[in-house]
Image (cartoon, rainbow, N blue to C red; front, top):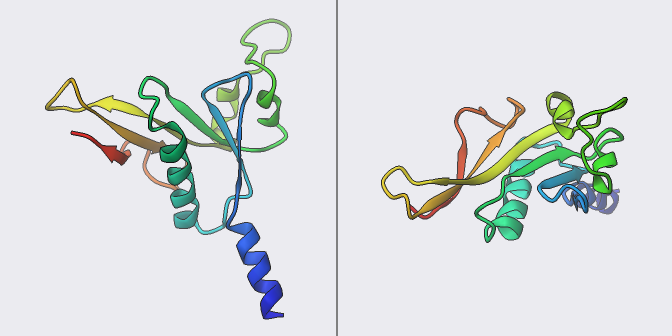
Length: 134
């Protein structure tokens, strides 16, 4: 029984990250741990490992759901009869936004910040600093 519990725990601690092939700045996550701190650590590690070299992009992180899976291989469609934009699902499926901002004391340097949409993860208006080159 203990072995089974360990297996279930270890599986739930390994979420899947999906990068959209059509919306280059979108990442979807499936299977986040229930523990918020563990989830934040996994998300932040993934973002730093995969996007710290791209200082000109803003990366949007959403839960992988039936609503957001559409954007894995389909572009946003802001107009027409049926519009589809991932920002429409921010309140329900949005997790965070990650990007770089200029340092206050040096316009030649920057830092990577993350802002969580959901209050359970953190206050959107008090971003976390993931990389500080200031």
